[in-house]
Length: 605
Image (cartoon, rainbow, N blue to C red; front, side, top):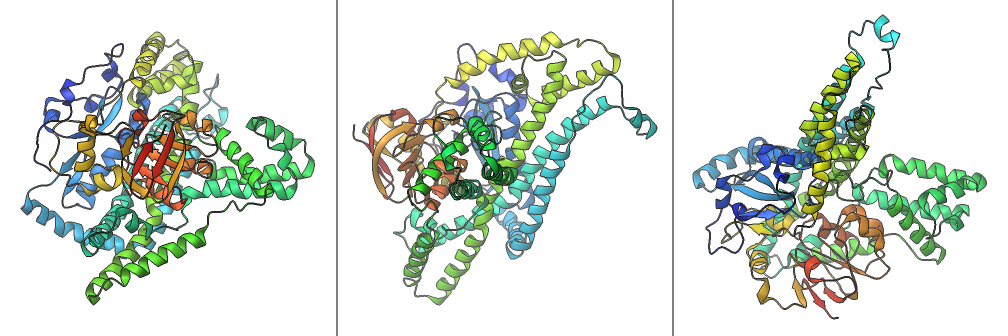
């Protein structure tokens, strides 16, 4: 991939275990641990998807994507210059390293296969995408329909009379296996289109850079904005419900002091109008409240259905705006007009007919693939993942019932291979009415890991590890994560940067000033106040309901085509992404000047 120059980051082998969590690596499968050869590779901390220390069970949220990413990149579509990504868990944090193809002959060999396979998908995109929707919703429906056995004192006699020939304890393992297999299969569906989607984007970006040497990444990206995608639907539903509350005359039940349950209770007593509004709420919940409060990679980032504080806070705010006569809709007409203006102006700069034809074709393809680049997140990371974690909790009730854990949430301190073993013993215990032989083992393991995980949360992970590369040949690393030679230089030479100036990618245009609100955990998102600037490791698309509340956003990681950048542009929210250190340098309460045109943030106070 690269030629190494002087080292700017520690080697993986030089990272010491966190004090008090020396055995943390044992929480995760052996293939996630550092090996001697890893010191020769460049690694970066994937704070975009995994900004927190990894609970043992949640390793499946990394194993799934990187297993399927490699399969589709390297084996299915045969990308010419990259085959996938390695991942390691170091002190509970996910580090990635790209697997490049550097031999010109091998690249040429792979290119022949790639062109045939990618061309088939691009030529049949609409049809294949409709098939994809049927596949993913079918998978979700199958998981939702998976029945968790109740394990009664005696098996129902109908089971015997129906000659089913299988007792309920067999269904424990079958249900768990179906859920795990369905979750891992989801990641294959996820990767089926996503890399080709980014491929179309990247090809268009590279063409524009060649034809218009001075053009910014942000300008190219703005030529594809203004497309309504599913990830914005949950927020759109909240706006619809807010308008209905005002129209039905039940808006007075929504106050900032009331908790969601108290608002619902008040509406139940508000007569026909209140009950009618609650019916509309129930319609919206399935599936639009299956969106996670985070980005869909941690079990504790609960869905809106499970943790409704964020959507109800947004509802209260939207209702207030409607009553003031303000328009709470996104200004799509303005966005479309700006997009068409940019496209028209740059088309006029192209004089060669063949280049103009290429520009039009690439832009058309990029706009066609855009919906999947965002829509898949709702189906995969949010809807199906929320169902998956709900099913795991149902199974954990059996472990709780047999005294293996003290709380349902304790199941997530075991990795998914260990949970399979524990459920196997539940099946055995029910069959013989015997006590759980390993009851103390699982409870002891959980209690050992709880303080270890807390220690890992307090660790400050380096942004990268290993030899610094001369250049970055993996375009997805640049566009999605914002890993470029310039960002690596900034990360490894923080002493040379002014303390009050933070630089990153100009993700979404606009210059604003405001008070900083540093949010390092999803649970802190409700602390945001009107007019503040959000500073976070990465901004989740599911936070859309608070975007109208803030003036701008700054993230540690992300490139011009990261989900945070895409969403910021769609909501006309000034943003600087990929700063590497904003959450470390900025403190809540400081006054900031955010320049989304130039990609820098000045700490004024």
